[in-house]
Image (tube, rainbow, N blue to C red; front, top):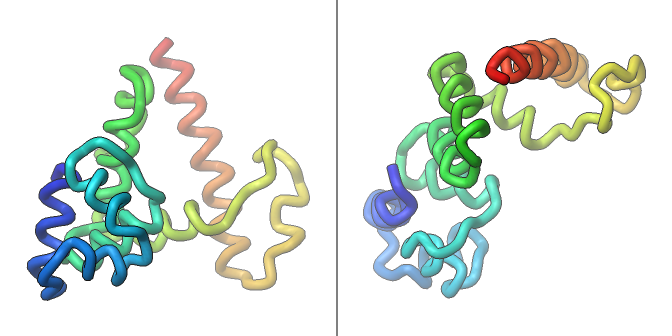
Length: 142
């Protein structure tokens, strides 16, 4: 789904009569949303997630499509692989990945030091292993 279709579907399903009212609902200014709808700009992942929810589409797919558009040829291969590998029930996983930052080096043993919820610690451990697997896969493409 391209950005114009996403914005249009979010307006229709959310009952927003204008682009300005939709922009207010997703907390961006009207001109930014207009540029997004015309394909001339990109917005934050959080804005895409809000639009996807309003449009009734899977936020995971929307985020992957966004990053595929922005990526170069090698990056597009990685995002395409992720799109195939992620289950349809991955919105929770993606939300954790987007909202819980990791240290710059995923091998650091203290990655869980600041986590206050066990489920986030588990997800961070899973992500570290997943990121290492993705790096191995990416290196195999070269």
